[in-house]
Image (cartoon, rainbow, N blue to C red; front, side, top):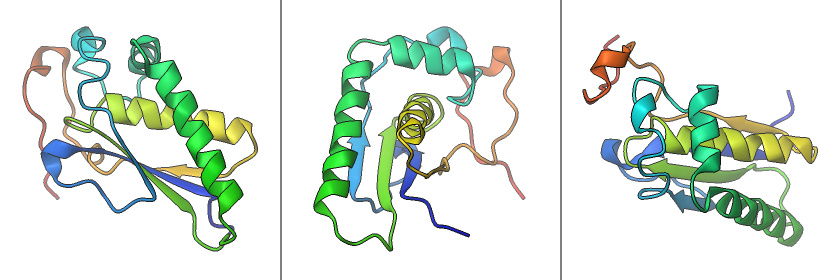
Length: 141
């Protein structure tokens, strides 16, 4: 199996330090309020991705991230290891996951192979719309 060109790790700072990465995007404070009515969903949901994409400055930030990836690829002669991008937000549930999805989609459209695996979303307990204010904890095994 061919290893991906790029590995994206969405994560939440509330659950620990940023994972080791070539590029780290700190999205805490971005898209604030954009997803308030969608707290019962994660960034895997299309509605959350739409809200994050439409939030102030996010399109520009994702374009800059894409250009940074291209710059790394142009400068690197080491093709064996994938380029690792960590994308963090406060709790790792919505903004970072949605941004990772949006960036991965753009990279794939340019012919790159991308693995995007959230660090802090799965496995999670099921959330209902009424429990949106409740802080999520990883599901016990």
